[in-house]
Length: 478
Image 1 (cartoon, helix red, strand yellow):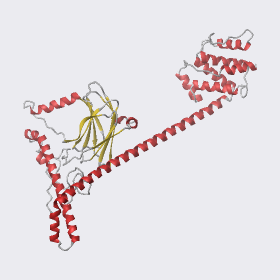
Image 2: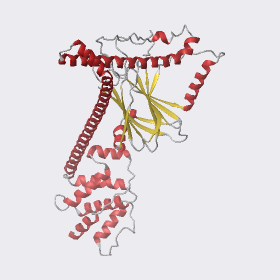
Image 3: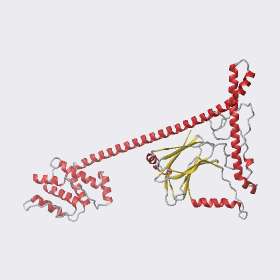
């Protein structure tokens, strides 16, 4: 009998569980009542049988034969001579095991597993507490694993947020430094031109007081700088107005009752009189003034026509800052979990991301990358009042664009008549060029020129066969 027990233990040492035919309902039943699916529970039962046999588990010879037969059926299926060891005529235990296995007939492997578990549960009351303890341990391990994954994810998100904020702050500081350098260069050039004249004038006003002379020279230089920058601003504003008028001149001539002339829609800002104390800062600088960067001058007579959502274009658009970085895979991983930031752009198609300016923001930042292939990219600014700050995406096919061009061409056709072009004026910030964004993450920023909507163009119209997957992210800074 001792030899039979040892042989039994060796017979279940290396059990490999093959696929079973048990239905999903039976598997769910075991998972609900035991906390394990059938294969896991069977392995745990075999482990308990090996560890407790002869100790906490006292079985009769007949019960052991039945359990061993179930393990053979669960491992190999129906009895087969090629997997059954040769037994001698006098080997009573071996013959009994073979007969017990043959008696199971065509029983499926999953049924054999289930019968082994049920038989062991009925024979040993300690088996269920054993499985409950392992189930609790498994749940605890899963809970700790989930908590650790959540912690690592939060840490990664926090690091990424801090990195983006630091990068955005760094870009803002660089822009401010560049603007300050430009202002210093302009001031130095103006001061050099007027140094002799202002010095002579100060000597005439305060002939014996050097301190008052220096103070008067500083005031004159400041006034001269403000007047010069206002003149530059006005000249560029007039240039923008002329372009805007030319764009709508034909519509104004053909339909005078539908739309007022552009000259009535916008008026140039008032000219500052020499010697006045009004202080205005150029678009390139960050000095405190009544003019926001690239925005209209405070106190001007520019007003929107009643019922229109357009705003006048600005005097000057500052150039955008563009840079790249190498961590393209980590960028994609951080973006792809948000489906709204992943766009599928088909061949011969163009995607436009509309980003309205935010009342709390001063600068727009963008980042984008693609899989495998490059894509065209450009940035435009539409001078219109958006009813909301929601970012929207529009994907259009090339055929739509051609139809739009044809509609534009028919405006000059006398037979078809004229159509009113009520599109808001749009300025180009970055022209559309193909970018190798499948190799690097392309990033950029642009200071708000005023109130309007940024148009981020992703152009795949040159690709006849390949569609592109775009990963992008936009945000603003205060």
